Image (cartoon, rainbow, N blue to C red; front, side, top):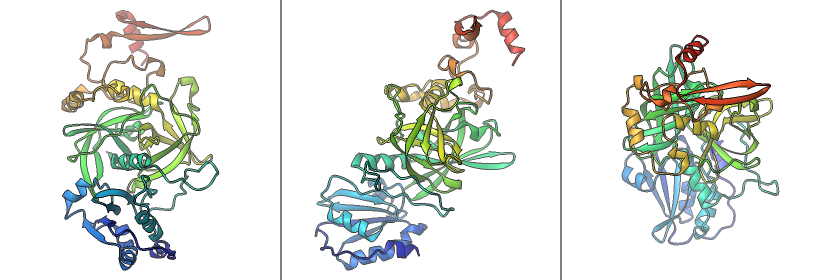
Length: 422
């Protein structure tokens, strides 16, 4: 049945350009690579030169071409790459790519759906309401970078383990920083075993992770440190001076029911619609996510991370993502605000955080501080007795109007009184 969907009726086409070569990157364990063999055989019958590359045996070549998943088809002409397609492709799609290799635009990238129950996908619609428009080179590159930076997380507790998704947003030396949602660590308190599965050159690599900081309350955001052992390009976080627009085209990656990461194209249907009384930051999108996509990233067309998946409304068929301000707040807790301020890279700060022992890192639990104090809490790992520890923010009712004051050196009696009411 799969082969029947791929071997579409041949259209009348001329022979492909004589200098066009199709490089097929595959791996023995890839089911979709196997289903593509009748298509590849048909192209060879038409005179298309095909170079098969087993990513397990020719790792250097796979790394040079930055192959992140299999199958991947790269069209080379005149000694340079002209376009690439990721995932199982219909025969006509490969033919079209071979004949239009001189075009500066890439053909649509199709995500490879894992063997899981079918999930309806929300597709990007054109202005006329038709099918998804062919993405530009920058959009296709953005999708590939987001997919390469997506990891599958396994979070263990006394009941077993749960599966979620995360996105690498920073890497320095051996250390990489994964952004995900906080409720993944609610049951374990952030102290259970964490594993991250990285998808690199057609292989799945499992590495240990450590919860750096998390909030399982209204913000629902978390950071995990891993050592991937391979070079992965981090995803840029949306800069603070930019905003998310209603109706904006976006895409997400997530591990549906624990499967390999898959992409969904969608659009923003609401900004900060939920918990407005708490000043919460959230993004609503068309299409409800399913279990396993929790913690997965939502990306704009430049491939920048704008939000993190944390809830779904299946009746309304919408997904809820914790928004940019929550991401900024979490990065502030570990003094990595430069990741959204477009300043210098994190550098030694990430390595310093990873070297710090668990006792030096304060995990933020379900007792979520008010969003009004965002940016004023002590940074994670701040030594006891610093000015940040002595700072207190008080919100009080002044004749029906809420006011907020900051006490840099609150009286001991006030601190004792508040401690009694925790």
